Amino acid sequence: MVRTRGLGRVLGQVTGRGVGRGDRDDSDDAPQGRRPTASTRRQLVAVTADHVDEPVIPAPDVQDDPMEAPAAVEDIPADTGAEAAEDEHEGFPGGPSDLSVLTLYADHVACSVWTGEERPELKLSSHGRKVHSLGRLVPAIEGLIAGTGLSPLITCSVDIGDRGLLSVFVERCHRETSSFHLLVGELTITLDDVSSLLHLPVIGDLHAFQPLHVDNAVQMLVDLLMVSIESTRAETAQCRGSYVRLQWSATNVHVVYLEALRDLSMTERYAWGVAALVHMYDQLNDASMSHSRQLGGYITLLQCWIYEHFPSVAESTADQDYDEASPGACKWITTKKTVKSIRTPTYKERLDRLRIPDVCWIPYGEHREVRDFHVRSCYSGLLRWGPIVVYYRPERVVRQFGYTQTIPAPPVDSWVSYDDIHDRWMHYEDHIVPAGEVCVVPEACSSDYMDWFFRISHPFMTPGHALDPLPHGHASQPRVVPQAP
Image (tube, rainbow, N blue to C red):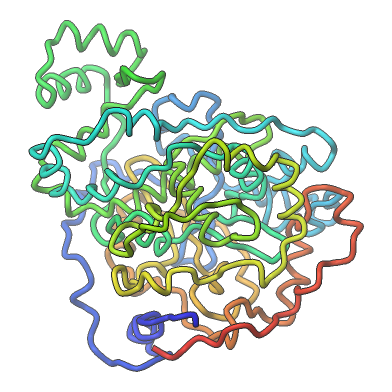
């Protein structure tokens, strides 16, 4: 039985459209974090929006060097929707015939794959096994981490990334919608997924640090890590900027992130779950471009999200000793044998034949006693962590919240500042996706949704599968009726 305990209640309280029982005021759930100090020069971010007061992030330029310092706000270009409108009626073979949504499809890896330009499996910039090899932290250090809100990450890191599995999902990820485009419609990693899989807080402040000058980076390293100025200058010179190297990998880490840990007594106020999601979205956006060859971010989040939602696609092994009190990502065991048991073409074929009943739309029923649903997961708008800005669009995936999916509104151009992003996040109740019609079955969508989706997207990745009849199951089929909260 699929349980949606708490979802209807919290949405009803915010939107005034109750879906379950309960009229308790939810105002105590809103964090009372401090708003960022307005800078002397308010920087503007180019975005697109469903409404004038609900901005959507555009597609930023893809960086060839993943270790490059975060781009300044001025480097984020405006949306390219105007150019796409000129080609609106042309479309792409195997791709969208209506280019009003996927305006960057010409540069997307899916466009290249359809024409026979297969991309090698992505290199994964992940160090799960190396982190585990360092051993367990000493109690004093573990206690400090517990105070930051990051302690769940100590135990939930996937040792081995499945390059083939992750590569085929990246081929279906689009920065314009912040979602994966599949044969069944759109799905995405939501804040609720992050909360359930990683047990990181999705309530709190968005950190507002800015790119750091190398001189300031040197001073920060001296103050916080107590290293000599000489060795610090040598390190930043070796890294060619405000970075330091990890001894056990080739990864360079930007010094600016130390700012978030300067005062450990204050770090718990940050929404670390938002930080994880912003970085994951940002890495997916870059990796989905045809010229990209690697994927960074927290690979554990993406891989375990696939395991939870797509049991018919991935070969996953659940830990029989898993305790529901632990983060959901701890449930999954990965080995070289399981990762190498399926080749990339097989994963691609499985996604090209995916049916609506094959998807686990609401996978965390048994976990709700430990990690309840929070209404912030239905916030729609921009999210940021420092200079990295992405758009979070839950209105495109409301089936993951137990609602009937309808055609979302098309984007329009707008502008919003960094301060406005934080202000809207702190007043999230004004930017919640309206509660729609509760699904009789979790996978329900409106009668016109799938026809629209096939026009604006690329349901298939290979021409051969596009010629086959649609798999049985693309009309909603009753399976499990959710219980009222």
